[in-house]
Length: 236
Image 1 (tube, one colour):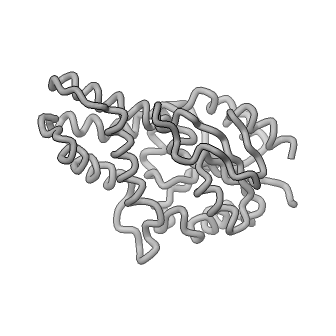
Image 2 (cartoon, rainbow, N blue to C red):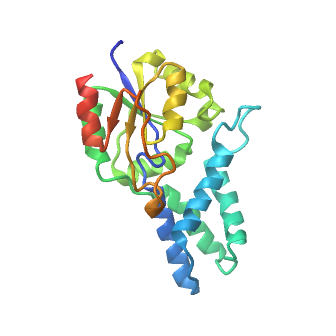
């Protein structure tokens, strides 16, 4: 196999702690209005609905919306379905905007800086461009490139999205490694020739645990943390 020249990172979940951030935003709004719910479960419901709308979006024609639009629309549905009508417009805006304020997992920033000395590092994500910019600035992350599927007009896990990401980096797919904590993303990348690195994120969905926690055995790298991933990538 040829050398890996670029690492393309799934960003929601693999890099950003969406569950911790968004569930905290729900809890803060609930305290203001005297509402008690299972905020962790509601947050996961919100995430599942949003993913259902976004994955493979654009397969039947040009994409008509981005993740920010979906987060807003799905938030309204979650609020209605969980009897949270007491939340005000201000509360809803704070919950919606929390996506742009998410913290990254603590083992990532130093690993990113280390990898950037030897590889091109790019956020390759279904999240919006503005969300990645905002969270990068908030967490001190320096990407060489941000490739949001909203730029491409077709979303992961469609093969065209991965091919386009490699093309925009002026690389063959085999020179790229997709990094994620989700087998479905890595499988789709491998189908078009990417190499793959699975990094476990056991807390991505909070106490519920991730729906797909065990990596496929054929990934090029399997790691429990980003420091371990760096070591294994360098050893390839």
